[in-house]
Image (cartoon, rainbow, N blue to C red; front, side, top):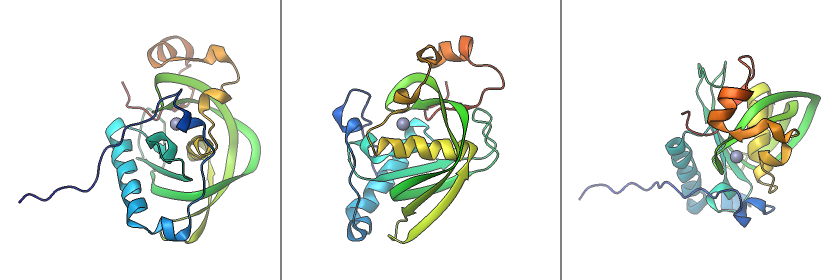
Length: 195
Ligand SMILES: [Zn+2]
């Protein structure tokens, strides 16, 4: 009999679904090490890969728990990324701002398909979290990774990037944003499949 793959692509909740507005709960070390949660992590990576995302938070796959996964490749022209990151699995994460100075990216989200908006966030943060073995970890990030982390961890507090678009005129459909709103030197963060 052919081997049945254990992973699955999960359905992504879209803007308007109440699960995206929930305050997610921490997971216990026992839960983090459980087969169910390990499977959820695998599914999230598979789902993120299927939709071409750079990060995914558990509430986006209808699980209101404090878990996010991140992975992106270096040499990504679209994101102007210098360094590969991940795969990174963060449980029960808390963000501490290290530099209030802001950097802006055009952000997209798998839960808001087809759209992008300009968001400015603190440029440098520290994230304290538990890894897949429930061991304490700390990570300092700046630039693109700092924005990806803040975007994903916002999801755990029921916050979406659309809440942080300061100028509503800088929010629109990806195609139109690309055609009319972005400047060539603008940085892009789009957790969607590039068109
Ligand atoms: Zn998102």
